[in-house]
Amino acid sequence: MYVYFPPRTSNYAPRGMPYLAGLGLITGGSVTKLTYQADHDKWLLEQAAYIKALAAWKAKVLSLKTKYNAAVATYNKQLTAWNADYQQYLSDMDTYNTQYAGIKRDNTARSQAIAKSYGITLPQSYFDKGACLTQAQHDSYARDCTTVKGIMGLGSLDPDCGYAKLPICAYPTQPSIRPAPTAPAAPAYPAAPTLRAEPQPPTTKTSPGYTKVPPPATVVPPTIAPSSGGGGAAAPTPATPDAIVPAEPEQPKQAGMLMNGLIIVAVLGGSYLVYRTLRKPKAQAA
Image 1 (cartoon, rainbow, N blue to C red):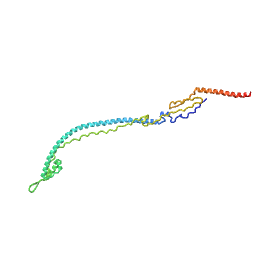
Image 2 (cartoon, helix red, strand yellow):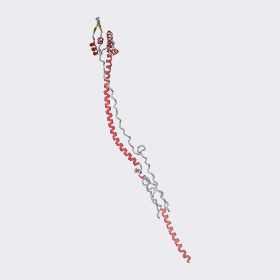
Image 3 (tube, rainbow, N blue to C red):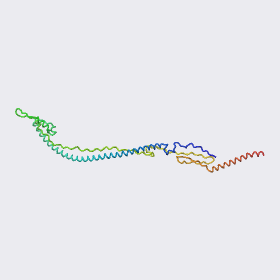
């Protein structure tokens, strides 16, 4: 006796071939891994360039700081010396102002007396500038000064002669001081180089380019119907999603023995029916 099992036409090669999903050959996982690997290789080159740029940046910043600190030290030293000179300058200015005020006071009184004697008018600017003439102005007025005698023998006063008698400026030299030192300007430091975050593999949802790959589908093996005349075996349990090969059902021994017994009974029964058929005509003829 033969039991016919029809060929399996469904679920033999499931759609999408999930047994290859673990290798990332069919699903989007392969694209995600390739994208990550390319981006990570690019990041490694960026990291090497960043390390080199960072070293150059640190050297540049250190050089600028060293020069700036040296300039600050020089400035502080110059400022200390200038402050000492400035205190002396203030003392010299006090002496100068006292002397200037005394000389100007004497020049003003003398100039007013001369102007009154010669009938000349001196502008306010003359007194503001110290109530005196420069040496060049005095020499010019002296050359133009003349004395005119009248009919009665009385001399007339020439204004130029009056100007020539005005005091010549003889003030002390005004103290001076050099300009204060200028503090050095802080250097403009270059911006530090930057490096983007290292790309993470597509195993975490937070990494760039992550694509969720669905888990491989579980393949349900086909149910094999039991053969007639005997009990059928239970459906086999799948081993792994990669390759599912259901085991062939095992025919129970008791079912085979029963089948053999039925065949013997059928043969004996058939022999008896043949015997009855042949014997009946003979009985009727007798």
